[in-house]
Structure formats: structure tokens, C-alpha cells
Amino acid sequence: MLAAVVDSPGRLADVLAVREVAGPPAPGAGEVVVRMLASTVHPSDEVTVSGAYGTRTSFPLVPGFDGVGVIEAVGPGVPAAALGRRVLPLGSAGAWQQYKRLDHSWCVPVPDDLPDDVACFAYINPLTAVTMVERFCRPGVRAVVVTAAASAIGGHLAELLTARGVAPIGVVRGTPGRTVAEPSRWRALIRTDEPGWRERLRALTGPREIDVAYDCVGGEVGADICALTSGDGVFVHYGLLSGSPLPARCFTEPGGPRVELFRLRDTVHGDGRRHLPELFAPVFEQLRRGLLRTAVSHRVGLSALVEHLRAPAAGHRGGKLLIEPQR
Image (cartoon, rainbow, N blue to C red):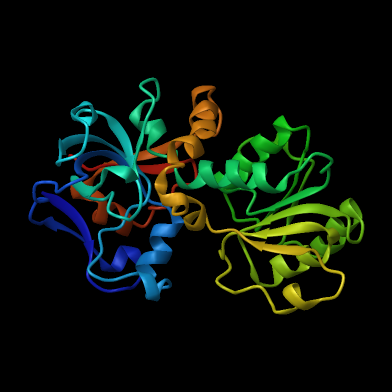
């Protein structure tokens, strides 16, 4: 079968290679083999390939956390009815190959009315957004700030918060060609490449009057927003796009907000996997209603993935890349 393989850590476009590898062996007890139908490139793939998670990443590695496939073979103990079922094969990377072997308990059934190019994106961004809003946006919350507002997950958060009657303030880097998907969902947008952005944010929120901040940037931008968050509020840190950690003062400053380090992995890997269908139910319902959708800008077969990633215009500002592993 074809697989995209990384032999050693580095920049994704530099270290990824697509090659023929041995297909998966017959599934063992409780296992299945999934024929992958669609996948995508997520920032978590790039971070993992970079070697940032050294303690839990071993090479060679087949990347790909997001994806959908169909169960093509089952091992002893797996119900025969699972054959032919479309699923999200979770628990590990490995979506960038034509077949993935895994324990059946990691397979989340996909509703029949969700097409592959929708289900393929159901995991990391939508599940993170739904879980964080449910967990931290309690009744009475009014002032919410979202960093990286032009990102896919920033758009998901705005969509969910608007449905609760909360118009968030978005913080963006001002990258040329990037903007939020639906401006009407935002109370205001603050560009960190403009002088005085901190003062403008403070004028909108007042000192220490942010109820909830969702931050996937970190560094000094994250720290400045943390400093404006209420002592009774919560600063949810779930990413590190800046490449710099939050300064220690975010955790030690007297009177500061509660800082929550949200990791989707902790949610998904808890409870022995028995909770996975329940965890995804609200995500599938939102997708079925046409919400939390991810626009696709390019479709590429697995065999052409490396060439595509190395092309000068490989960025996908109008949407995400959809990988079709079977070609």
C-alpha cells in the first residue's frame, strides 16, 4: 500500500516521503483494518512531525490525526456488523496511508448522512471547540476573547459562542489574505500587527473584565490577554502558534485568572474509550445542521501529497487541504 512516512523529525515538507510499504497484517483479536477515504493536514501533524512531542513520538511515523475510513476487515471478537461501517479511526496518527490497523474501540461510527469531505474534519477542530465551549463558557459569561480568530477553530468557536448569545472579540495577527470567515459573528477584531492593539482591547473589555479567553498563540500576546482576564474568569490555553510558551507570570501573578491547559488528547484518551460516541454526538449534530464545517480549497491524492506540500503556493487560505489516500 501507499503511505506517507517521516523517518526523522523536521519540517513536514522536508521530511515527508510517500512510498510503497507492506500492507497491514490480518487484524488480531478486537482489531480492525480501515481503508482510509479522506484525511487532511492539521497543525498538530506539523508539530508532531517537528519532534516537539519527543517523549511520546517515535520515528518512523505515518502522520495524520484527522480522517475518515471504512472498516474492511475485522478480527476475532469484533461484531461482523462492523464490516463496511464508516468510522473515524482515532487513538493515534496514521491517517496518511491507504489502510490503518487499530483496535476497534478507537473507531467512532460516522452518521450515514455526513459525506466523507465533512466527516474527515470532524475530529480535532470541531471536537476541541465544542468541548471547550461546553466546559468553560458557563451561563452568565459575556466578555470572551479568541486568539487566532482567522483560523478554522477560531471560526468554530465564534459560531458556537454566537449561538449562546455571546459575540466574542477576535485577536488576529493581520496576516495578508487572512480574515475571519464570518465577520458578523465577532464583536470586534483586534490586529496585533497594529500599534496600540493592547490599548484598544483594554478599551473594549476594561481591565480584568474578560470572562473567558481562548488562546492558541501563547507567548507575549497570550500573556497580555491573560492579564486582562478577570480574577474570577478563566484563561484557556490550548495551542502554541507563536512557538513561545506563556510566561511564568501568567501562572503566578496574584489576582490573575484560572489558567486551564486544555489538551484534547486528555479528553479523548480518558475513560477507556467508552465515552467516544457520546463525546462526538454533539459534533455530528452540529455538522448535520451545516455548522462547524471546514471549507476545502484543494484535493490531492496521497501519491501527490509531498509535491503539493513543497509547492510555493501550498498555503490554503481559502480552506483546508483534503487528502484522498486511495489515489
